[in-house]
Image (tube, rainbow, N blue to C red; front, top):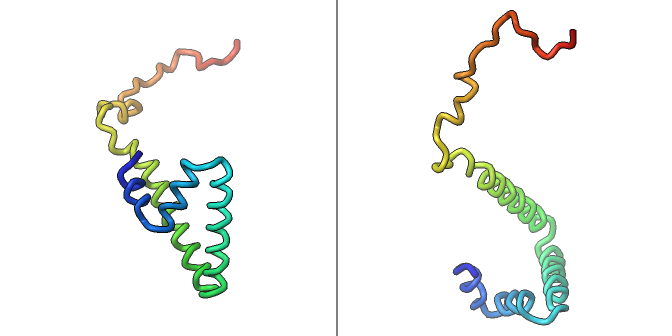
Amino acid sequence: MTTALKIFYHVPILGWMLRDAIRGAPDASYYFAFNVVTLFAYLVYAFGYPFVISVALAGAASALAGLVAITASDAFAKDRPHDVYDRHATRRPRSAGKSRGKVR
């Protein structure tokens, strides 16, 4: 279990609900999802359309950050030699006399 999740468990109401959803009864995850949806509906009712836009912008930003984090791991790999990336530059040219897979 990560440290951030342990710290979040100590938040008075949300942490208790999350801990119960993960470790509690089998139907506790459904109650947690219902509470999250109800909270979202109340916040839309209270703050209106700007809340929906803010949530959409935050979701788009987190999705972009997630994609960058997933794809950037290959760019900074230290366990592979650097010449793996230049394998096409050292390819020998084919001779003109050889067949290139054509059927005679």
